[in-house]
Length: 628
Image 1 (cartoon, rainbow, N blue to C red):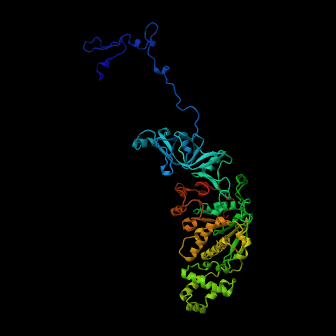
Image 2 (image 1 turned 120 degrees about the vertical axis):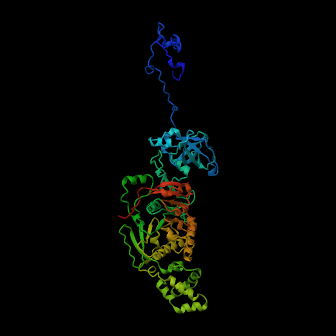
């Protein structure tokens, strides 16, 4: 007896001997016709049942059905509504997601540009703002068994999970008489709209508002990889507007390049400056002439004089590619190095072949910029005594040709000190303070070289690059005086309604300043305030006067806000300092990428030119770069 009760001794064979004759243990047998009637097809012609056969010998296998949908997939997925589908004026009011199919998931990155068509032919241009996996089925996989199972397998089944992309609308693209245009996002796409990656140059440039022509900066990228298209070349060039058809050229709206040590900021700056010096680049002046720009570059590390020479690493194949894309390259022959004569400092030009011209700062420039001799800091009272009493008195006695040595002798006169004190014009303590602070510039002014005021035609040349190196000057106070004296001369003449040097006034000018944080920093001293006000005014009037500031720094947070606010184009390379990253005021979506960018990667924020974008600069410098 088994635990199945009376059915334990059951047998399907009626001829099998059993316990049927046992009166105490009855047995049940199947009727003779049971097996035959159960399956008539199994009976033989004479009515007897065929012997049972093994199931594996029959034709009972299930037919395999292809579950893949018919046709060919188009795009990478579709807009879904499982979590809402909404487009609002505020980004926080927008809920837009797409389901990405399994075969496309590996190629999708945050920042990838996508297109979602509307039924009437318009298209939503958007970018991926976030990516996530979600449960396909309700299950708790935060368990020991799930974890250990994963540890024993080589991969996961993508079919078990949803892959969702959160989309950030950028613009709506539409056709206007055969021309593709953009407008702000004002429509929501339909549910189940098929989305595809943007691979057409015109669609991407229109969606991001990137100009077709202008000053080349780099190639559009996402996550450190260049955006590829079906065109030739497959990359997308990013350019800054450089004509007056749609506003002022951005070179005169000012540019800032910010990057840490080793980020490639000098490499990038040289490549941009080389585009300003392209043969075809001219700007219209008020008198109707079209004039090439002049560039004056202050160079604390003695690197920009190399722009005179070709880059030996720039091979023919790379050069042909540059020519196809309309990128100016090669050394610029019209490059001159203007070497400041400061004390006994000597300049060694062994790393470049550009012409060198030595110059000095004449003390006469102090009459218009008294703060040049106030490097140690003067308060308002002392500065007023210098400007209103001492310098005018000296000028009346020695004339415009008075030297710095004569000025210090003038201040050594005890009779002058006593006279001014007794008259109440300058207190003796104030007089002594001014005298102490204007000493120490004897190695800066009136050295044995031609004054820069006699070299203006050579210094500011249409189509020419003038480099002012200061690396050989070990005195930071002298360096600051030289740079500010020259930049003030250029700015004053550019902004003047009655300029003394017409050459400066009538030439488009780019004023480049490396390590700009050393000269344009926020400070409490009187002279620092004068410098900031001068550069702020230059920045405000630059577009009208064809004057562009080109600032390069590794500490953008140290540049005074009054100047920073006038910068229209900000190019940010790798920065590791949190304060520096915050100071450049780029969108948070790009701000988070800055500390992780490799050499040559950059973020460009230029509201009047395009949407904020990520770029990759050229791998090779367009001119010579680096010491052997």
